[in-house]
Structure formats: C-alpha cells, structure tokens
Length: 520
Image 1 (spheres, one colour):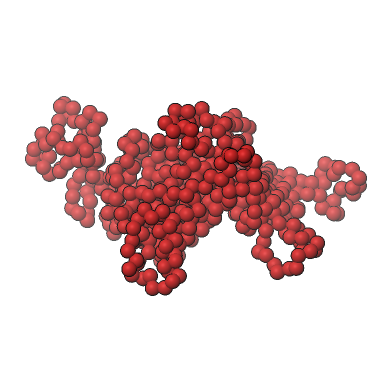
Image 2 (cartoon, one colour; image 1 turned 60 degrees about the vertical axis):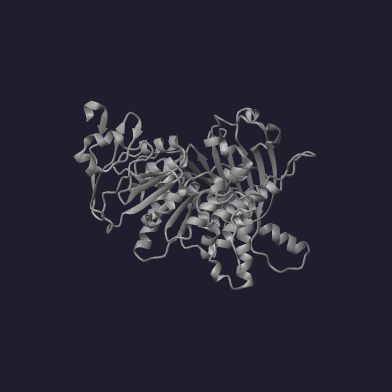
C-alpha cells in the first residue's frame, strides 16, 4: 500500500477495556482517514475509500484502571498549543481529545504531539460533551467570550477544569458565575500563570522583608496584540477590552501582593492608536467600531476591612495610614523596551523590584535608626541600606521542585505555564487520593480580577465629550456547549425558594435570555 501512496504509521495500540486494535494514522496525500482495522485487514483497498471528513479515532495505550489523567483540550489556539506542549511531557497525563472548529489550529496542535499518544479530534463542542465521562481534566482555551458559557456547562460534571483567563468579560457574565457557583460540581482552576513566573514568585517570597506594603507599581511595555482567529481579541465585545483581557493578570497580582481588595480606581486611557495596525479600517462597519485600549494608567487604592468610626481628622489619618496605593501602567506599542514587565513593591522597611525578561529581583532594605545614617540633613551614605540581587533564570533558585518540571519551557510566559501544570497535577492527584481540591487560583480569584478590570474601564476620566468612556460588554455570548445550558446550571426542580429563583433569574439575565427555561 505504501507504493500506492498510503503512508502507514507504525503506532499500533491495544485498548484493553474495549479489546480494539487501532492504527493511529492513515494519510493519503494531506487527508486523514478513519477506518475499521479489521475490514482493512481483509480488504486493503478499503483504506482508499474511507471518509475524508472524519479524523482518526485514536485510543490511549493505558488501561482504564490506571491513574492516568485523561485530558481534553477545548480550544487549540496559541494557549491551547502551549498547554499541549507541557502536558505531553508529563507521564501522568494523556491528551485523549482535541476540540476546535478551526482546522489550522487542529493541525498545529497535532504537530506538537511527539509522544505517540495521539488524541481523537472532535470538531464540535457538543460532541465533546458527549464524551465527558471519558475526561478527567478539561482545558478551556477558547476565545474569551466563550469562557463563562463553557464553564456554566462543564462545571456541572465532576471533572477538573483549567480555564484560561479571563473567566468572564462582562458584569453579566460575572453575575452568572456567582449565581451558578454554589451548584458547580467541577474542581475549577483559573490559569493565572503570571503568579508562577520565577521572578514574580521570588518577589512574593520576599515580601515580608519590606515590611508593611504601602505602594505597588506594575508596568508592562510590550508589542501589540497578536493575530487571532477572526481577530476576536481586537473586539471589545468579545475580548472584554484590554483592561480585562490583558490586565486581569496584573489585577490578580495586585490582590495577591497586597492581600487586600481594591477600594476604588481611576483610569486614563488611549484608544485607536493602533487603528491601522489592527486593521479596523478594513472592517465593513468601521464607523461603528470601538477600538480596544492601547495604553493606560490606572490608579488604585486598597483598604483593609472598614472599621466603624465617626468621620473626622483622626479617622481620615488612620484610613490613609492603612491604605495601599497601586499604579498600573500599560503600553501596547512599546516593542524593544528593556523591560517588558516590571513590578515594584515598596514597604516601610524596604523595596523589592522584579524585572522581565531579565528575570532578576532586587531587594533593598531601608536604613535602620541605629545604622550609619546619623546626619539627617544629608542623604543616606553608602552602606546605610542594603541591596540583594536574585537571578531567577535558574528555576532551582526559586522552586524546590524545579527538577520535576519538564525541561522544555516553550511558550511566552517564562516557564510559568510548566510550573502551573506541576501545581495543578499535584492538586488532581490529591483528589484521586481522597483529599480536597485546593486550587492556587480559584474561580473567585478569577472573577475578582475581572471585576477590577471592569471597574477600571467604568472609571475612565479622560474621555472627550461624546467619546465612549465606558466600554463594558453587556452580551454574554453563547457557545455550542448545550442547548439546555441553564438546565445544567441550576436544576429547576430544586427552585423552591425566592432566593433560588432570584439566583436562577440572575443566570438567565446574564445570558441575555438566549436560553429559555420554563420555571413553572
């Protein structure tokens, strides 16, 4: 058959639970085929007659009684591909399903798999949902606007879900997640991998040494957004806009570093500076386009839980004493900057700074009262403060499990995705051993960061008259998850109280009435 143009992969697999033999690939030209191996054995020419529309149905070589973690990838774009590159490096994980309607994304995803464990390709999410009992861990790496609808659907099953940020893109989607959260059965982990970037994690480890934190500055000067399928990331109604899409990472870090919630914020932004770069001019209804944010300053303040005090000078002084100030600076047209990301945390005892891609951390200690700085009419002399530098390019200097991390650190996030998978894999194994699931980044962490981004967009203060100064998407886009999405979110038979009815209606409202459910 090879002489006739049929290339046959030697990857013969045995699936013990179904007693089925299956060849992984039969390629004729550029088309993949699905076939009955036993029929092919008796009639080899049947290989040429198989359908061009069906991908090969491939099986894992492990028996079902093993503790292999069966993974499905929902969305095979850039982030889905980055996850695939790490998953196949772990012996405990096997990718059994790839799901994406875009054939180019599927082809690239398949090309990344080199361990011989070829997955089954499912072009439609509804078909993937039918296989939910064969999935232990689902990776949601679809476009932003699909994250909430897909979470609402898949979280009704007892699986683990790694969902890409942001978990929501609008106030209504956040409300839907909050309403459905008590009924969710899945273990959910939000992919906020910036927490695990070596230099950032080293900074977090040394926070106690700077004393009470008073200021946090996060700066990103980078290249414009990359090209995506149908350019959904340039659309405010599909991405959530830049302060949600991109900056939810940084708002999450503000919460993590301060240990507090944002009290208020105010923003200054630029829109439309990259109009030509993003191709808005070529759109059919270009006059109706609201371009995404290209640069911004966001000032934030974080305040501990309020105490009941009478207003006055003393209470105002105590309030500002306890507050922490934050500043986010973003520029999406700063290619070639020495540092793409900078995080600076200043406390009452010192200051710590992290720089990327330099991957170094600088720790400074302020002069102490009994130190050499005696003459306060002059600047502090050298030696009155200390400096310590940490080179985080070697993971072993940051993580004690660094040797367990796959050596191939592919992707754009300084190996943080690999570290994220190590933590996630440990959490899944804990569940297998009967222990509780403890995510490093919970669902509430995910939507809290989104809420900060939405607040920043709702408080843009430099808009000109007539300009759109509030871009907060109101449409929670549907997905192909399920025609009965809301039936999965909340069981209507259990709605026996006004509180439950109110929660249920919040989910309906969040989905903009797209899914009709009879409450009678």
